[in-house]
Length: 117
Length: 244
Image 1 (cartoon, each protein chain N blue to C red):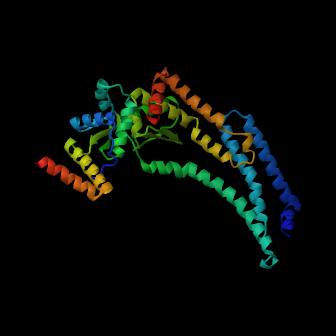
Image 2 (cartoon, chains in turn purple, orange):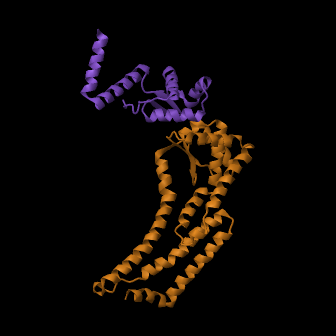
Image 3 (cartoon, rainbow over the protein chains, first blue to last red):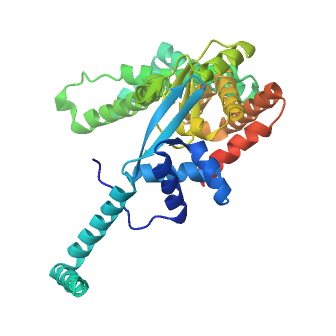
């Protein structure tokens, strides 16, 4: 599986788009927009931009559907919510260990033994 | 000795006549490009102008002889070689730009995209191509989220992002715009503008005005056929919002 990139921040709109995709599995840009516009003020172009950004960061995948009625992108999440959250934790912990080395590991150790008591 | 070789070309009356006549014709054609309003004529005259301009130079370079022997000096050989390289180089660049513009670049895009057949978009293209009295162009789909549409000779390229973003009517407006460009041969005009930069007179004439007129004409065709500018404007707004 492709590794997810730059997951430090997900904007509120990105989070909303992903939440919809987790529920529906695969959707057209316009369908996501139709659900999202009931919840917040958003343009179809913004949803398309967000989906492309998520695709570039390997959070979602897409395929082209060439139906008789037209041609469109169908987006679907690469992982379910649980898998995605696990990836975020993994990336964050790895970054902390990379940055602070043994200090981060001993902190985690302290923290978990505290919790264990 | 170098100067002598150069001047010997011009002392030959036949060669001098060919050289000057071609240059004079190139100048006359240049004046005609400025005066004519017809786009097709402008394109043809641009090519003729470049041919007449570079033909005497190539003829001159071809006549520069290198049979003086190596002993005649380094400067002589360098001078001849540099003159030949400069003239042949510019001429080769013009041919290269033409080959790139006509064959290579459309070919690269063709390879990066896939042809779409039997789709609703093809039906729309067929309908409007008939209306505009042009041969049926081929439709190619680019796997790109950015909304892009452009056309060359008889090909229309659309990005999947564009088709996902626009409604049926808006897409129809974009297709009509591109079909109008195909009808008016705007891609050839764009290439002519680039080629014209090789002319030493390029400061006095650019085809920028003609190209912006082409855009206006294409938009006017959309409005005339659709009967409204609503869809064209909303398509433009969506694309600009995406890019901002």
